Structure formats: C-alpha cells, structure tokens
Length: 304
Image 1 (spheres, rainbow, N blue to C red):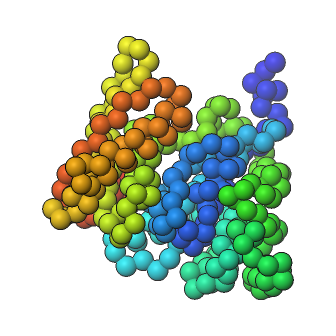
Image 2 (cartoon, rainbow, N blue to C red; image 1 turned 30 degrees about the vertical axis):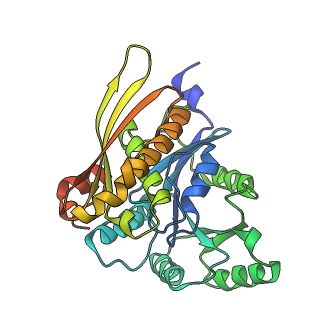
C-alpha cells in the first residue's frame, strides 16, 4: 500500500475549547481524550497555557486545544493567559464555546460572544453542567445564546459524568477537514513529560491550599532521572513569592508538602504507568511573575 493510499480518507483538525474560567473546559478535554492531559481544580484560572489533547475518532484525528479561561485580565500573567486563549482560537479550524449552564450568561461569556461575533467565526455551543440546571432554564439559555447567530450546533453535556460527550466527539470528528494525521495514532498530548509532572503537582497545590496563594505559585521540574529499574526520579521546586508563603506550603512539620507530594506521585504513577520517586522543595522567588524565563517555561508570551 502506498503512502497516499494509507492516508486516503483521513481527516485532521484543531478544535479550540474556549470559555469563561471554571466552565469545565479541562474536564471536557480529559473526558474526550479518555485520560488526563490537562489539570483540573474547582478554582478558576487553573489552566495557564494552551494544552493539546489528541483524540482518534475513526478516520479522524481531533486535536483539542484546551485554552485558559477568558476574563477581563489585570496582571501580566492574566493578560498572557487570555492572549494564549485567543491565539488558540484564531489558529483553530473550529471553536467550541463551553458555558457553565448553572452560572448562565455571565459578563465573561457575553464578552467572549461579542468577540467571536466580531471575528465572524462559526462556533459550537457546549452547555456544561446541565445536570445542575432545570430543563426550562437550559432551553431558555440555549435559545438566548443562539440568538447571536454564530453557533452551528448546540450540545448539552455533563463533562463530569460524561453524559452527552460522545455526541460532541462524533460531531467534531465529522467537521474535521480532509488531511493526514499530524500526530502518531497513540499520542494523546503534546505536553513534555517534565511540564506534565509540574502541572500535576501544581494541581495538587491548588486542591490542598484554598487561599489565594495558588495564584502566586509556580512549579518547575528541575531534574528528571531515568533509573535502571524502569522508575524515574523527579525533582521539583514549588516557587512562592514571599517568605511568609513558604510555611503555608510546607505546613506544620512539613505535613502539607508531604501530602501534596504523595498525591502528585500517585497520579504520576497512574499516568505514566511506572514507579515515580518525587522530591519537592519549596523556595522563595519573589519576582517570578515578572520573569521572562517563567513565561517561556509555561509557553506564554511575556508581552502579549
């Protein structure tokens, strides 16, 4: 069989998953891919950069671009995150707007809709968390949002339970343009393992620390050592901005950082299907939010 015959009938394209913070975009991407490729927490603005989740659906390769939540940014990091989201949308073959149906038509969503309408891009509307909302309210919300005239289709799903997600994938696969697959058939993300490991640990920090502190935290994988027995040693640093924040991350007697490390190690072992030896240190790095190197590490533009 020639190379041309092998790729005949294949389709491939990019779907930008956009929406307000905490609409459930990352949960939806993980469910569509079938495993975790992007971190999730109940806190808004968890996703900081664009993450690709790659799904095979018959002859179609669907590349999902999980973007940071879009909101009115104030700080440099927030501006960089929102810029990354719109860049992901501009480069995609199709845009899917995820809306928290329980939250409804909020200001952030209105602003996103206005910008999508300005660009003239057709989009898909995905109302998420529908299990938390009465049917009458759902229908009213769908009707109001479809008055914009930009949506080709509307889906009602619960990303958390997976209800309705299969219909979304079937539709997205049909919309992919003809062309060769861009990634190996068994690849599920483009995220380097060092960054994935750092993101998993950052998620555990978000889940363990409920103050505003997580937004001042940056996690880097400093060292990755492959061992002869097939396991890996990973050394990471959790950076905080002030000396007073360090004891919060460490916890009394180091209990907090130990719990964070155990949770991160357990998840990494499941994701990587191998033994992981994880060592985490906490350091003060006062100006990391203004350092070009930190933005480069996160895949963000320093001056969006």
